[in-house]
Length: 105
Image 1 (tube, rainbow, N blue to C red):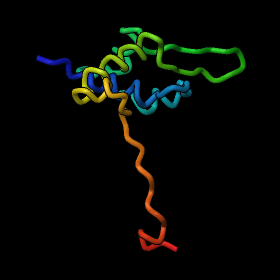
Image 2: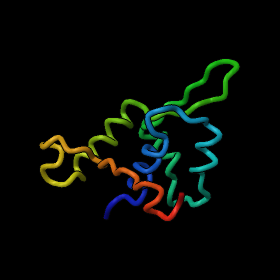
Image 3: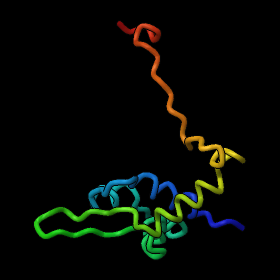
């Protein structure tokens, strides 16, 4: 049986992203009252997030080096066969169509 929390932890790490976010924002978005889905707690237990505190500043949360490595390993394992070997981007860049094409002027 697969771990139901694992995909949510990956979502959390993706959501935090490459730059720290305010601790209060992270807890507001990711707290849960479901004891079977302790995403925030499990990410902390696994060492996937860092807590940053500077005196006089709001507390921040960042993806730890261990969390980044875990996220990248999962991305590499879920990439289409050959995509990483060929140097393809994980997410293609899609250009937005001109406003006139959407009926806007």
